[in-house]
Image (cartoon, rainbow, N blue to C red; front, side, top):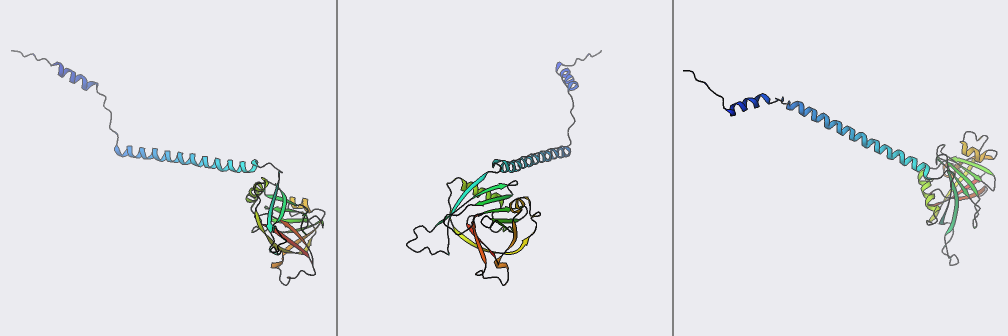
Amino acid sequence: MVKIGFNSPAAQKTVKDQKGVLLVPERDPEAATVDGGANSTGRCLFTLLGLAFILSGLIIGGACLYRFIVPKNKVFHGAMRYVDSQIFTDSPEIKDPYFLASEDVQFMGDNNVAMINVPVPEFSDSDPAVIVHDFEMLLTAYLDLDLDKCYVIKLNTSVVMPPRSLLELFMKLATGDYLPQTYLVHEDMVVTQRIDSVDKLGVFIYRLCAGKDTYTLQRRDTLKGIQKRSAENCHKIKHFENEFVMETVICEP
């Protein structure tokens, strides 16, 4: 007797399903971890590069804006009210103890040079003058317009504001809404020697002093044995390059 067997439909379906299954190899967990770490590191690097690019753009843009937002060769007018401690102000005859100092300033050379024009004062014994502060040469030159003489000294960075701060001060003063009430500072200068050539003092001081008698200055408090100025010929220039007014006294022995 011969037995004839038949596969059930369920069994046939199982065989077909097994033949149709596509086996996908499993990934190594360690390799997956390495790939994920590499992708994360790459994303961080791209993010940092993007932030650095944005920050550099802001810095460069700010510098360009600072340079070009102020029109070149623009003249700013400023004024300050000040008290002179050497003048007796408790007298009932003096109703207003404040004096007024005014000047015009022009920034040149990518705003690294400030040229200040001090007009003829109305109620003062000081002289009109043109002052150049060259922040690249680190020099200051005074041209006394009454004497038609130039005086040169090292730039006093403890008194003269840095270029950007000085520009911001005069932009605020130029609006007319800001009139500070401040004080007067005195500084004494002594003429030391004559300068035969101004060629090496920078282009701006050269333009100011070329063809004029030019001398070097030194602060009196740095000179030993020179304290009196009774027998000297002295002239005053009142100006401001900070939030106070400066009276520069220049004396020739």
